[in-house]
Length: 126
Image 1 (cartoon, rainbow, N blue to C red):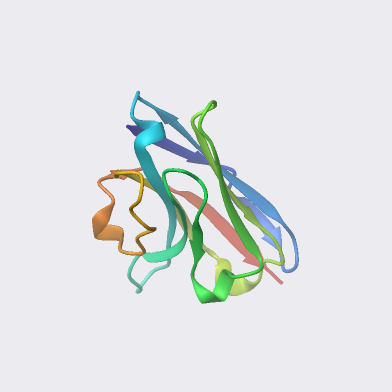
Image 2: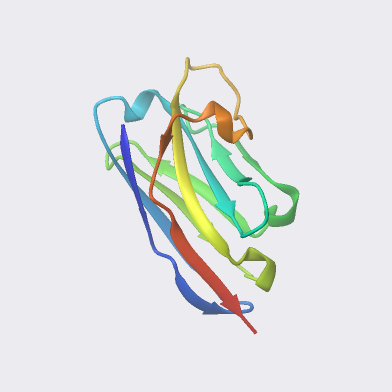
């Protein structure tokens, strides 16, 4: 599966932004999906993940209650709705995918994801 993220840009503290990730390939519906982010000097960090079925999601603590991950298998899309953005959310955001069996829970380890989009920059300014 190939992924292409979009939707980044410059926003102000408190604003909302939705990131999108378009997938190509026939295996999308068999993939669990995740969003990660990277800032200079830090490792790529888990933001949110959604299982193959879409029934289970997980978030890193700092975005819990502010961000929402969702997927649309018909459109082969995964989204990250980001609300109440703050300066610590500034990063390059990546979507990622991994093929799993149906019952596998979300993984927050970037090494578990073999497929990656190119990244989209989100800059939050005050």
